[in-house]
Image 1: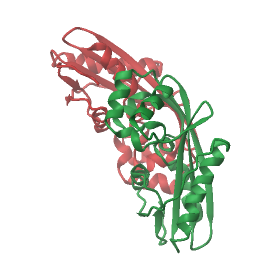
Image 2: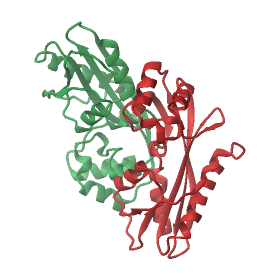
Image 3: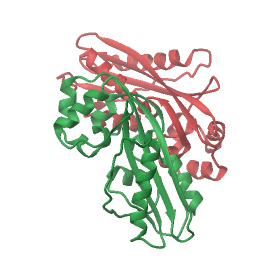
Image 4: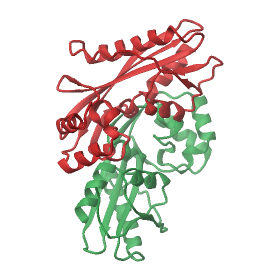
Length: 192
Length: 192
């Protein structure tokens, strides 16, 4: 349903975002740019993710011309505190223990820019995720699988175990995976 | 994390349920039995789906011994009315037009029985799904793809277009796909 001759570039390293955009039938290429992410605890989460997506967009704009660029950033917020990606297995275990039996929010900010007409949209989505009580053994087994290490909050909702940790969500499911598909799809349509 | 020597049989034709159980690392086989589904509008949805799952379980019990059997049934309810699977493309279009811009509930009932110890669990899950306003053109294109034809409510939340129709959900995402993974996982653990 997205019809355009302008090349679309997803400026993200996340294999999950790539898979999601493929799922909606989009033709695109990927590119990545190093942007230092500063997870400031002083900025409101919804502002922070949009700011981070915008910084990624600006970095991408310097190199990519005459294209539609998509960037995004996802963070997990528990009790008002931002939880990034775990740096060690020990940190991953500690994160999952904190999420166990509790509710947290996932924010994804996105930025979309069409270099051929200058149209730009920045937006975000918030989803509440409730975990059931996790057993220590299943946390350890999940962390041992390596899956949590590149993910904000140390879990993937679409993963084997990640899926059975989640009791319920409220909001957009794909936002938790890494890109709010319905919103991004409509934003894409509006910049064409 | 599910460890048992008892064979596990998923008694369902749904390729989506098969994929979900594979996702959580379960080793199982599938089998299907013909059970006439009577979508009575007089029974409460949560009773109906459990009743249908139980009927499927009883049919399976006659043929499968010394195994753990899993059955399930999913229905879509809009304004108190049950919406089944579309029989024609015209019906699929009409269903999607009804769901457009509205909220509906998805119910999945499941039945799990361990033939080696007689333990049985019947349960259900309910998820609220909100669609954005759909354009006639995208409904037509989606129906033309053939995807809606074997699905209750004429959409698959995990499908290409299905994914961008959904604005938000409240509850278990996998329940909308066809099997409430977190609940089924815990029920499975408790019958072993």
